[in-house]
Length: 318
Ligand code: PMV
Image (cartoon, rainbow, N blue to C red):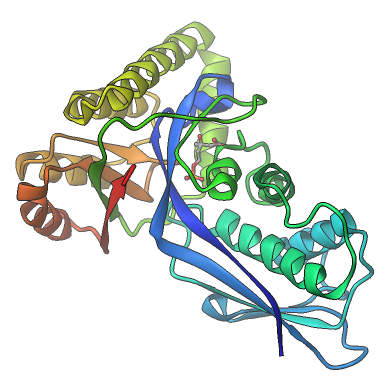
């Protein structure tokens, strides 16, 4: 019997990755074409709580799992937050979000589990403050993200938990931003798995070696983010193209692009995209391209030809 369920979308960072770790703003948006879903069912008596992650082929018994196991950690943190002792539940998680490609698959799996556990608790026990607020989901997922990433800025868990485009500054409540006119992006997966923890660490070392240079790059990225926010608000998304190119060039200068991402960006632009940039940690993962509807087929084809493993088309603000 199903006791509860939860869902969370994927995400992309539109502008501002890496600089956001250093207090500059970023813009991020949910990608609802892909999602993680968790379902809670009654398990055998005395078995405790187990998580079955179908896509990862992973089964985790929470009572036996290591402290840093992310699936067990999200369950432990959520049960503690709800004030529940470990129930005999079986949680099944499925996700259509590409893994390790900067679409927030880990954060979305965590958020879906948090919501499913809260939903099940709500039907089984008298617990106040349910359903959980987006802020509460975000805070729980952030604790788990720290296990993956060390010191994440918090942008991933925020956009996934709030399920709306956000203007994000580390340590501040997220601000939804106005979208004057929806725009369409192609999201191309380079197929290169690149742990965010490593690029974030490399940027840190580079910043420590050349603080003035890197602070100037972060400031330039902050200017791009503010200009992008204004262009989106007034409904002039075409103005985002050059801003994406500029953000990509700045990320390249920071050393977080790679030849494959640069090739995808060039292919997208040559096929008619209005602009393109890497999205997320870089050196792999995703490239995003701003595309007008009439050139979308060409751009998607060009991205595939240039090596994209798959391409997702999404509308921001629709
Ligand atoms: O690789 P992703 O999509 O999880 O994005 C990481 C974004 C960074 O700014 C590089 C790191 C962070 O913690 O914000």
